Length: 348
Ligand SMILES: [Zn+2]
Image 1: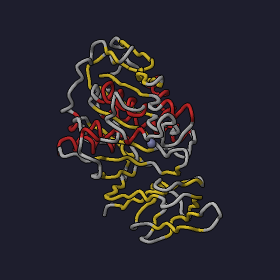
Image 2 (image 1 turned 180 degrees about the vertical axis):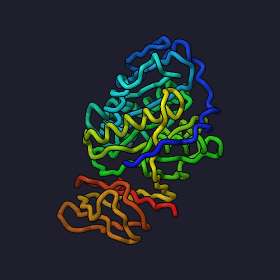
Image 3 (image 1 turned 180 degrees about the horizontal axis):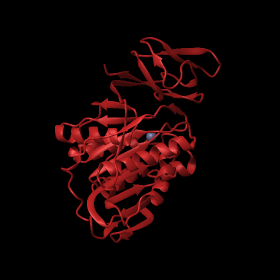
Image 4 (image 1 turned 135 degrees about the vertical axis):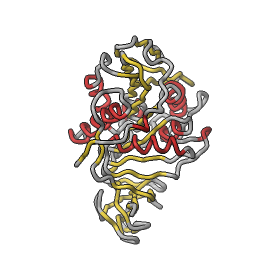
């Protein structure tokens, strides 16, 4: 990927510093002195005998600065962000860090343990649809509640790090989610560039209701925090390129926020996407792709077909408009209402 230096840093100057920066930072059972790093488990309380915990690391910088949350594993089969999150423990030195980094290594541990795509095996819910969560709810809702209270409410900036799920062939891209606050949008615009992925979706589709924010990144945004969602990696793979892309993206964000010295990286030729649509399957069956991730498709083009369990074609699935295939299902199973592919229209 071609990159150039030079994101304007002016937009980060307005960042507030977290109240605990420059002092002990307490997160669940972890008490982390400034200039130190600690890893541990954030408990998610049991209900009906079912609970879990969330592996986290706090890197509390010796110098004052913002609180950045890097969250991986909201979907437990999305490995490159998870593996990158562990590499960041050796890539960031608390002695030279300004501010505090909260790393959530595997937000959805039950999904990771059972190797499930999309859904938590305990309650069948997609964690990234149940924010801000509910302390009295099912396990996914309780995980979301802990993340909202302990991570979102504690940070100034949040990066929700995803990739193609275990069944999704995906090109790297970020969501720049728009808010009703132009100043916040300017900050998140620069944050999206700083993560370094070339394709960036300008996303005005997210709900504006803080009580039903659904997505982790949107939850942070609706609470006034700068937040982006990133996608880098695919198909349950652990390819080095995708892992490094996530590590570099996170480190570039740290430089952008002036938590580390050095210049952030940004794509030389960002591609802005001003409209996108996830096309879902109308029926259960077997999906066969007729186009590949990153392909340019025309309006009405057949992107894939769904066959029923007898092997008969039930549906020819077409592109709703011309654009780039951001991801497409790369394995046969498809279920009614679940995603088949996502098309993005490139901004002119
Ligand atoms: Zn995901």
